[in-house]
Image (cartoon, rainbow, N blue to C red):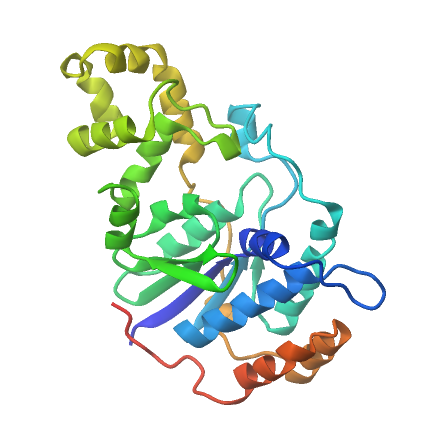
Length: 301
């Protein structure tokens, strides 16, 4: 029987909720909007996808291997307010009560952990849904893996499969998105790419030559200014590709039994929900933990 695994990029979902929702606060003044938004998306995803297993991944504040390769990596990114970071332990405590494993590893990002976990599960035995607000993770999409991403705010979502990724990126496959980042870079992560190469040129080059490596192997077939730009930024292009590629070999251990959904501490979870004064969420949480067949196998593709 095919099992379904839900992998949650917790930091990106919390970020999306923090910026999309008003500044909800407890009576003591603590900000809890990211906690509220995370729970909303968490509940919706479980109801929509009926997973057999759930795993969450978090970023750590320490530098990653990418910072060591390129000291300017994410150098221009503005840190989130402390009110955001104060909510991470709150979400982790809720996940502990839900008995959902939290994975994090110094030197790596949540994307790398998710990529590693997704590639360890046998293709014929597992369907994987990745929940993330970060487009970088779309490179992991394949026949067994889809990405559920908030489209606007936190209510509307889009489910990416291989065809949806192609539609979004002008015909590029998920595997080509890493090469695309090598050409275009990524301003949000301060990844340089090839200076002067725009979205249309990057896409057309990859549609014709398939990969960054093949583009550089066929420079003589590329005309004029584009060839010159590529020659001038060759090292930057391959560095950018390396920085943008998700590491699928993070040294982490996973006990599948610990990931089984349905072992939650119901009363303690409801007490925690009440402590946050999430009265509108209480009923949804009770419904989630009460009825329905946990782990029901619903074929998605």
